[in-house]
Image (cartoon, rainbow, N blue to C red):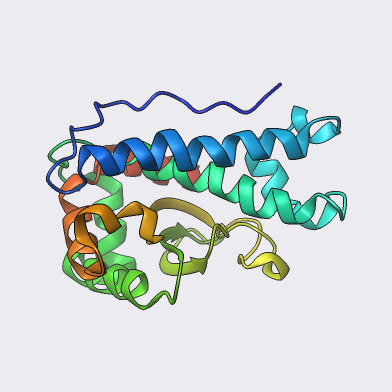
Length: 210
């Protein structure tokens, strides 16, 4: 079964001014679509096509050697973008519940989380992602990865390994922000906090803990 891009749960212009419509169009309909197509091409004719993207990336070191590069880049791009777009909402939402309590206890509160996450995003050299991750022991952690690497990939492939579950990610590739923000990555990072769907992130947190 081919991997598919789910429809965005909002219009392309719904996240403006934090993320403009043209960037959303190119980011989702061009970049994410390209990763999806190339992932399907890499999986075609193998038993990988019947697995989830999480299974593929967690066990990347067990994939055929000639497929690992394509799966790392395009499988990571497919998963990362899916998480990114699913955790955004027009106008943002309020952090509450168990996730809010965990951010308080594990990260020192919302302001401290924003500072740590912003720093991870701003200091990621070149292209990559900043992450809010649930660690195997259930604690929250802020990290970043290069390119399209994902936290639960094996360490040899730029991740931390099985059990490190990302629940929020910020794309800091230039294609995610350059049309509107040019070289002002910190402004893009600041605007991101205005469109986070904390209810969705909370659901992902509960699933990772459960």
